[in-house]
Image 1 (cartoon, rainbow, N blue to C red):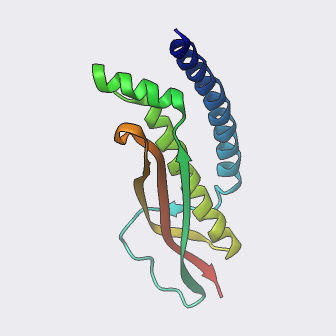
Image 2: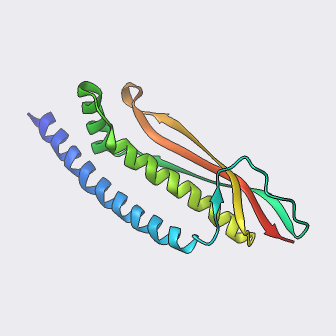
Image 3: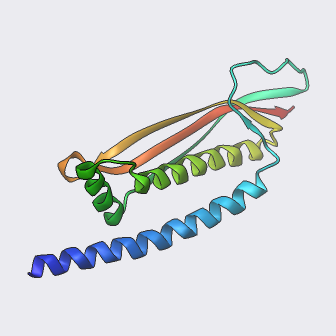
Length: 148
């Protein structure tokens, strides 16, 4: 009985704190996306025409986000019953957007006009109990073009 109470308390805390952190993070992401909207990030293999007035440099942004207890629990239920694991989808969406923002912030420090040929790499960097996902990392990188 005591174990069940601890489980329910941890589940409720995971939901409450996780929801709060996720909402706060999304608000930050939306505000920063508006601020950095002037720097386009283009995922193309087509080379930008050479311009003598621009330098280029690799810019990166990465983030590691941990999965809260509630998301892990819900994902475990989805593994039993099947279907979309929406709790992980929001986690990956936040991580992807945050990594792109960090890459754009690095480009902004260079006064870059744009970042092209962007790529995203995603990995699970920590395995929890039973080889469940504990944390995910997203790395965004691309070539920033900036004036001399």
